[in-house]
Structures are given as C-alpha cells and as structure tokens.
Image (cartoon, rainbow, N blue to C red; front, side, top):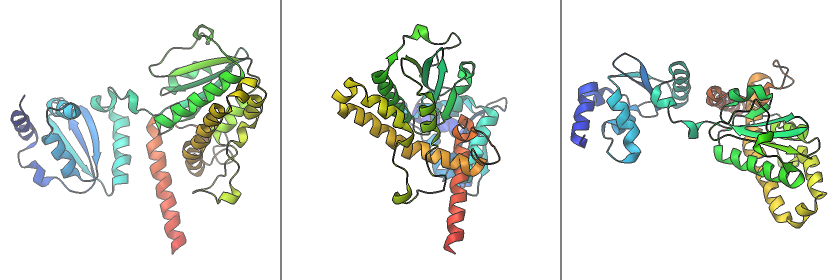
Length: 314
C-alpha cells in the first residue's frame, strides 16, 4: 500500500476532516475493530498531534505498528482527560480491562521486572522475571516491579556475580522441579553460600532506608548497602574477592545505585500509599507491586507529593 493509499484508508475510516475536531489537550484514544473489540489504547498530551502521526505514518519500520493498527481498526473513540497524568491513569485502566491486541502482543521487552529471592534444599535462589505469577509455585519472595529494566538487570547481574565469588552456582538441573523457564527470565541456585537469603531480602526491601517522601538530608541518610554487611564480610573472607577488589567494588557500586534509584523510591511510594510494614497492611506487601498497578501507584504518589509541597509553600 502506497503512502497516498494509506492516507485515503485512514480518512475513509475516521473521516477526512476529523483532525479538525481532535482536541489539542490531553486525551485517551481507543481503536476498535469491526466487531467493536478494542485493538489498541493510547494516550496523548496533545491528541491532535498524536493522531496525525497515525494518519501520516510512513512505510518505514518504525511506523509499522501504527499502520497495522489503522488497518485493523474500524472506529476511533476519544476520551478527553483533564491532564496528562489523568490520561496515563485512564490508559492504564483501559489496557487492564480490555487487554488490546496491539498493547499486549510483543510487549515482553516493555514489562517491568521483579527480582526474586528464596531457598530450596539448602540452596539460595536468586531470579529476575517479568512474570512473578508463573513462579508462585517456587515460593519465592518478590521485589519490584522496577521501572528500569536495565538497572534491574544490572543489579541482578551484580548480585549473581558476588554470590558466585562466595559460593558455587549450581547447574540448571538442580533448580526446583516446579521451575518452568520463562522468556527473558533467569533463576540461579547457589550452594555453600551460608545464610545470605535474609540479607538479600533486607536489601531488596529497603529496610535500612528512611521512610519519607523526598530524599533525606545527607547527614541523616544511612550508609549505602547497610543491609549487605554480611555479604561484604563474606567477600572479604574470600581470597579471590580480595585479589579482584576493583571488580567487586564495581558490583557493590552498582547495587548502591540501584538502592538509591529504584529500591528507595518504590519503598517510599508503597509505604505512603499502603501503610507499609507498620501501617494498615501490616505485612511485607510494601516490597512488591504487580505489573498493571505500578504506573498508577507512582502517579498517585507523585500527585500526593506535589499536593503536600503546595500546602507547605502556602
């Protein structure tokens, strides 16, 4: 289909003059197929500008998805929103409700990862996955989900490397019988590792971090990696770690950054909005949030923080 034919197709389906009716404000839009099923949900800060990208999508690879959506869709529904944040919340709600084909299919690389810790037959289990539900039979403790896939993988790799220095990583055949591979996920088992599972759980749950909105003053902040002291001590007892101190230090710095950029914000948001370990929830629910609730959590948390700041400034 030529570019001209594609534009004619768009105009025939959604109206040649429809662009003039599109708001320039925030909105959510839904493409529906001939049966009325939602095939895609999107949001826009400027709806007119966003939908023009669909109408003018070229044959280049980066526009392939937009052209496929237009070909599959028969109607377009617009839902104006009061703000970009409201549009994001509404988009998230509609995607969870409808599970549209073009929002769900092929989204593996855009899912938020969780890090998991557990034990099995005196072995320490450490994993990373975007599908925590599939690993429920393993009786693991999950932390996350984390918005930055890159930082989560870097932190997982750093922990895995340090545990390999201390103990012995088992072959895949020694993983629990209930383990099932998941695309992009990794699960490692370690023996001769000591009782480091509680240490990793404390670190990933951010138990040593202050519970407050915003960053505490440097003088009151705990030293980084406070809860990993047993892991650091175990490393100091290994000659190989001392001989390759620069690499070990690099891994520890990666974990310190992850604690600051990902663990602390997640703990703060979950604590503020769920009550945290000492609040109404009364349990460890403040360490994990499912995929479909993560964005809404931070939108609500940031909105409440902005409101508090406005009240204080008055």
